[in-house]
Length: 230
Image 1: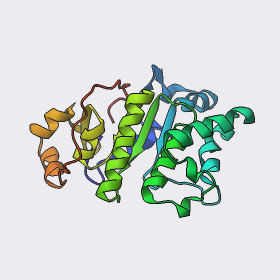
Image 2 (image 1 turned 90 degrees about the vertical axis):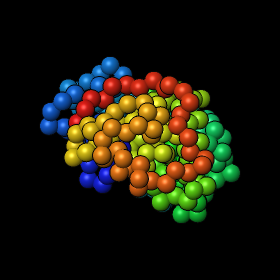
Image 3 (image 1 turned 60 degrees about the vertical axis):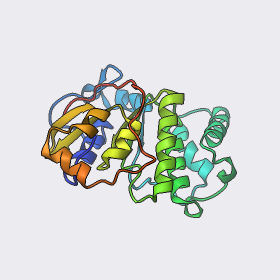
Image 4 (image 1 turned 120 degrees about the vertical axis):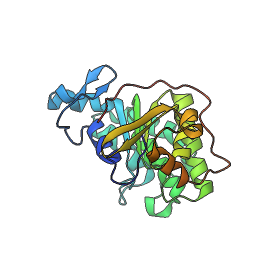
């Protein structure tokens, strides 16, 4: 999901995650309309979705291990099950040597991996990522994009990326939707939008984004849940 600043991208993400309630419309996640759920039902359904915000929101007073275990603690996962799950994630993300480290001691890329591991702790079906490559140097951005592709391919998680960087989105996503003033301006296969944009807003996004050599459109077709138009 792309758009210039103020297009409504982050608001849409917060609505999908039900951190805000939309004024109208539906949010269908894995066949369930989240706008119609009770508070208790929504709390249960949220385990199907992980969210990584642009600011990451890692807890500075908690180690990497404690940050990743937080959602498991909050949803009442038995303590005996938390440790092996966290260990699995630490190893999968290649940060096992940082288990006892605090966020301030990590690089930007390492912090991103911790935030992603925390978002995936409860084995969600959907991952929402808000500007996951913003303010990262090219090498770190490439690493984060590779990690997102691995999450998609190896773990089978549906990923919705909110960004203004069309090339980064195309490196992971099969489908791109461009927002303008809270409405869908254009939507279609990533490769098609890169090669033949039909709207002025998409052409502006392309013109304002440098095409990195290491970023390429996703070669596969991932499974996407309908989330509804804003």
